[in-house]
Length: 145
Image (cartoon, rainbow, N blue to C red):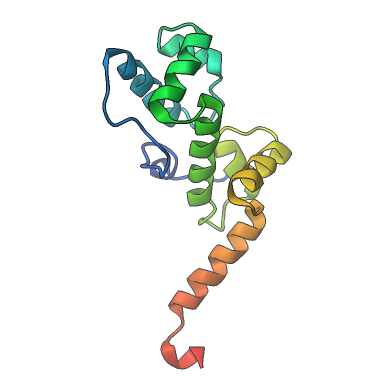
């Protein structure tokens, strides 16, 4: 049984990941790829596919992307997916597997490894900490004593 995921929680989100500020004509190709990847978060976009969207050779695209964004395409793509996963983990009804699938990971182990590498904590523990923080915020000052 698959869980329902609100579309706005995956697509068209602002992320705390580096994006270009001053753009040349070539850099607009990078912006096009950024839009493409963020609108296709439910699946993994490869470097070759991203280069194709930019109408550039993969090696040249990779160098261009790193110069414009400040990190490699793979690193940026992983960061975007993990940031989106963090927002989805706020929904307790979604399983960790459903969250992983929603951000383009078909293998739970790979998702957990990528999440842990970026956040220094596994997705389950992140969700537990988030739930504790939310519960603490909902307590009244009298209950905290």
